[in-house]
Length: 365
Image (cartoon, rainbow, N blue to C red):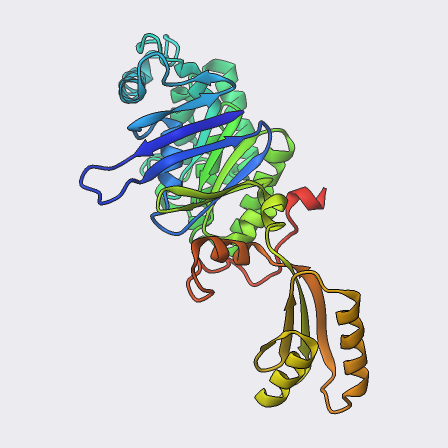
């Protein structure tokens, strides 16, 4: 279980806080999707959880243990940074001391259970794939046979067997994302944070990465997944957090949040109708015209309304054929725009692919 209580963070000189009283809970073994526009606070929230940026106030708990209780937020994060630098400085010394030993009182071993896959390349471009993996495995405290086995495991997952001797900086964008993921999986983290991992990658690499994340979720890894792409969140997330200007607009189970929206009936004709005719028909049936060839009804529909609709479709012989009749709940886009007050012309980002999204994991199981 991950719990964040009233996390506040303001960067120096910023007009508004990056995180403003953020509180949320993430259940063990679930996937929490972070959705929001640029500057909403998604990356800052992940970095705060990882200890890579200090928070001004609040508390972070992992499995009931407060990471900042014994030394305060800023002192804790400063101690973490110093400890990590000392450990990296001993990279050739075999890492004889446990990670975090230098910061007395801080439960740093908890953070060794967290993996991170950032949006940008987080490896040394002049080193080979194998050298990067060996380095970061050492930074994780892995040694000897354990380190060799763990590197072999993540190489197999990322399908990098033929690239081990290649310099990391010469890999294609998709392969660099795979190396990022492999590094994040070293040490079998119980919690995996991914910050917009599919931005700018080709469709094949994107699908591979999403499949890999799905497999990790199925194996019991707790995943915090940040993305602009609503179809990715809908596909992966059990629970959803929508951020706007550092604040949580909504948080909870994916299906429960979608249930806030009314169901909608859409009648889509095969060909356009004159505006006056469509408006007249919509008014008679109690619906809303959507030019040039659609009528919508929001909310629960009574049996009388459905009867009138059926009779009208039989009676009005001048109407085009029906192209689509759909009765469903609004999707994640509608939920996002209803909460942020934005119109459909200003989404947080375009959908990453034109293919229909896979159903949400809660409903697919």
